[in-house]
Image 1: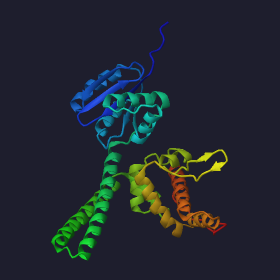
Image 2: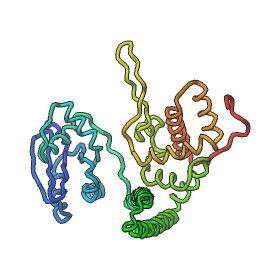
Image 3: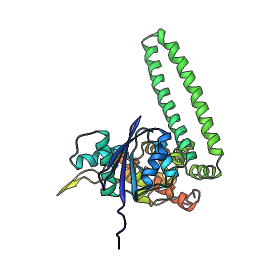
Image 4: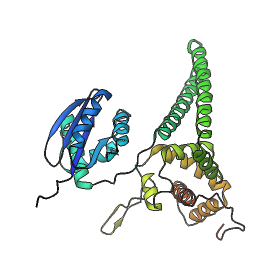
Length: 324
């Protein structure tokens, strides 16, 4: 009897013009042009293997076309955070970096850690995510230009004040247009519209936070509480050694989601009875404000995860909570 073919872990390093493909189990490596016309040939080669997973590193959006194509064909694609890959490479003692080495490192990451294959965002969610990202970019540019305008006025640099005002006016118009597109996109889906209403029923969660959660956290309601907290970078990491106990810290995760949850928790700590009571109890216990607010972000996320899982809206407590 012939044994079953071994499962293969594939690593694909994506650059602007080239794809480097590596197979961990066989050591095979080949390259392909990063062009959609070459994808069918790549697909044919991959389908000839018994695939365990295809590991690709996030490359600032360069990988999205390839990832969407392979996922649409039903292949097990995983997109990794670059920090995870760098940490893994350092842990294995691999300091050299070329496209070929990176491809084999991605394949080795898949074979060693065996990350779970998750469903990728559909096209509509990706478009919504792109609009949310664009809104963030416009807000950041507006903030920077307003600071520059203030500095120019204080220094009486009249030569650039007019230019800054014109640019700020243009950015404000683009922001209004972007927010209009976001609202229209949200109204186009019954599921998104219902999710938006459900999320905004929580005191502290506004339209921007709801949009970010819908676009950047489609796993909301589908994962366990500990998993969703870790995914957003809000799980505290221990720093203990022997008898020494350091402070727990949070890091990593999805930055835009963390920013949105921070603003929501800040408002909720004043206007949401559950979060306000929890926040006050932590402060009275001697916790620092920043630590207490991070804990509120985590609690708020767990509440939103439970609501999304059960498809229920916020229920205001009927009486003051103990410790409030």
